[in-house]
Length: 143
Image: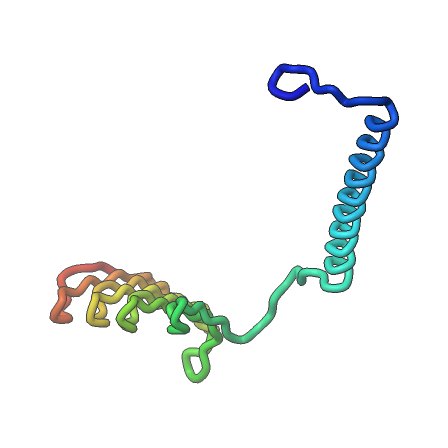
């Protein structure tokens, strides 16, 4: 039926030929789908996704390749792990540090990289919060 009107298919042989061609097209289409699924299964089996990614440093970069975040091990006397976040201009905006000694610090910086707030949790002592204005002058906080 086409547009609600019966279509004259002619003889049964013509209709049978049309059905055979349609059946052949459907079989070829199904074969292509099965082949594609099989190829995907083979790719997945030969290249499994790792459960764990291990590294000493990770960088998150923008479309231009500029580093915007870094998760890394910290060398030197304050060894441990750290996360650093930069803004579009390259200024450090957030520092999160977990030192090997057990101390932890969160530093928030202003648009020009100046320290504006520090939350610290030293080992064996009271934690503290320091707030600073844009010039770096302490404006509040607590032990």
